[in-house]
Amino acid sequence: MKLLYFAWVRERIGKPEEEIELPTAVKTVGDLLGFLQERGEEYAHALAEPKAIRAAVDRVHARSDTPLTGAREVALFPPMTGG
Image 1: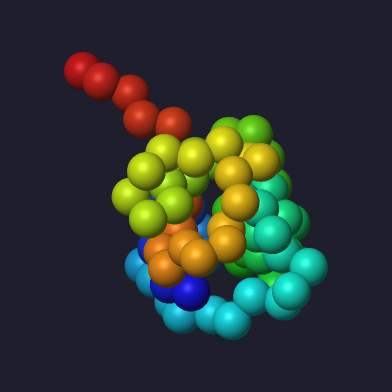
Image 2: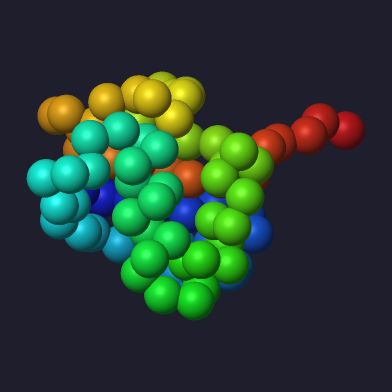
């Protein structure tokens, strides 16, 4: 699966994207965030407040309970503001 990181999520993780193979236990966006938090300090720091992270699964905004079955891409980003 391709993961894309934007804004301060990207800055804290230290890369704009990566390809990973998810463990079978990772079935939802929420599971993915929990899995990523355990991948190292930079991930734990970037994803410390999962409720502050927005996700898009295959370019469609997703909630934490959105299934990842069949997904090819997940984007993670902070809430956006206008101005």
